[in-house]
Image (cartoon, rainbow, N blue to C red; front, top):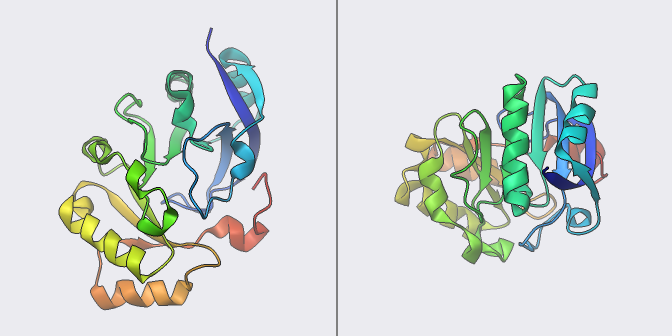
Length: 214
């Protein structure tokens, strides 16, 4: 029987992606092979508790959630049990999304799951981990997100839009790194360049700063 190592399970508002503001149950898996300089969930790198898949499903059902977001850390670091969890949730009729770094193969994810996948910009320190072959598994029900710290990051992200024809394949989000890049500055760059992307700030940080469980 599959089991997963879980850092936390909590009910809150989705703070980013196209479902921003939507009440969501978050299941945060433990572990991540990346070390992005702006990471706000370092507490999920280690620790956590092991849950049998069936017990975890019972716990999730107790919240009666409309939407379940599988996050981390990097949830696909526990690849097979994570994929089994998402498929089981879809089978139960839940809307399911996964927040993933883009550094691990996403081809095995159930097609009913919304993939919210990062592409790491230069200033993240983890650009070399981007698995660009993942892009072919994204469609218009998925999203690719760029967290940007600087004009250099922004210019790099613009090049990825063109090189991989991202706006034609999927939804694209540009998000300023909280506390590092001025939100208005990024918004003005996007407007000036008339980019086919969605500008987004992290709602949960505006509401709760960096508190765990939100």
